[in-house]
Every structure is written in structure tokens, then in C-alpha cells.
Image (tube, rainbow, N blue to C red):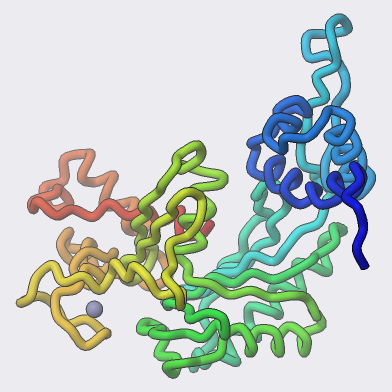
Length: 323
Ligand SMILES: [Zn+2]
């Protein structure tokens, strides 16, 4: 059915883009939002009114400088608004949190991987912890997002090379997660993507990359080295989602063996295990990010064993991979 675009229709179509701007902190006031959306003040007022009625944002109409002056209509996400499950699987465990609008995380819970960490068992553990958190939180949960330490082929969301999890090539993680969630009492939309890609997007929208046009992101949390590229606000993934596997760049052809079958990849030459070995520490799988922080602190304090001594130095961020 054809309809003419009336102002309320245009306003309705702009609800998503408006919420995205407020969610990312890019529209702190209604006048900024009006300019960013290219709508009239009346339409912007209708949009913010509807988002407020849906309990997605709050609108503070009090003048900024006390009782005098024009109301600035400051916009913020509603802290009682909906949440999603934000989960991450890594080589040594899994992390589950609820993420609200504005990217605000509830206290993330870290758990070890189940014994025999098959895809079904690991995803079941993710869903069990997610269900526990959702049941304990009064906010409405609208979806499940999962970060995995493997390139993910689109659109089927299959794991291409979960090297540090020993999952079979081509594991249909998206389908398995949807099934596990339904079985576990969370029949919600699910999405799955590569951990470095998601961390890059999170930094671009809410962290170090805010305001940048492009972002190159390199990270290491537990095993391997991940990388991602955001170009003009969009992840550079290539047609199948597999662009930029920075960890498999060869940096030393005579170097350590990599689980990918090659030798001397950045993944094994510059990840936390390599760093800890170079600093004379034995890796403890339950505490790798803490151990890495300890090496940095020791290097700063002048410990010669922890000091950098080659031109290639580990610059990953353990905390960013959680985003
Ligand atoms: Zn490799």
C-alpha cells in the first residue's frame, strides 16, 4: 500500500537513527539531534517524545544554568530501558554481562569453560549464566550478542577457525546459540560475531575511537592477536566477513609453531603467552590478563626481565577485548 510520507511517518522512520545517536552519546541535546537528523524542531520533539514514552530515553527540559534561560532539552538513555545479553567466549573461559543503552555493562561474570568444551556445552554454559542474570534483573531483555575467538562467516554465522577452542571447522554457532537459548528459556534474537570486530565497534562508538573517521584496532586478551578495521563507521569485513586476519601475519618465518599450521605468526609471537614467556613468567590460564598487567607494572618499576628488549613489543589491551 502506497502512502504519502507525512511528518509523523518521517519521525517514526527516524526513531532508530535517533536512538542510535543518543545511545552513542552523539546527541546530548535535542537541538544537536535536530541538526544530526536534518528534521524540523517539531519533528525532533515528536521523536524524543515517543522515545521517552517508550522508556528508552529521558528528556531533561530544565534550563542548564539554573532557572533562567531557554530549556536545552538534554537527552540521555533511560537507565531502566531494555538490555541485551553481551557474552564473550575466549580460550580460557567465558564472560557474560547485561548491556544497557549507552553501552553500560552490569557486573560481568567470568566463568571457566566446561570440561570438554564442545560448542553445545560452551553455549549452554553461556545461556545458563545469561538466564540467571536476566531473571535477577527487572529490565526487559531483548536479545543475545556473542563474541567468539574465531572469524565468523556470514550470513550463516559459522566459526571458520576456532583455533584455541578446537571447535570443528564450520560450526554453525549462530544456529546452535539460538537453539541453546530457546532450550534455556531465552527465546530471543541472537547474533554472533568475531571478538576483535565487536571490540573495534565498541571502541569506535563508545571508547577510544569516538569521533574518529577510521579505526585500526589490534587486541590480545588471552591467546592470539586479533585485529579489525572500521572505515567510515562501518566494519571492514569483506564480502564473507573474513577480511583482516592480522594474527596470521608472519613476523618470523623461523618462529614458533602456530595452531593455524604456519610458523611465526603474530598470533603466537606477540600474544600474552609469548609476552609472559619472554618476561620469564609461567602463564596461569585463569589469570592471564592480570599476569600481563603485572609484567607491565614490573617493567615500569625497572625489572630487567620484564623490560622491552626488541623492536617488536606487545601493545594489546586486555580489557578492550571484553567490549
Ligand atoms: Zn598462524
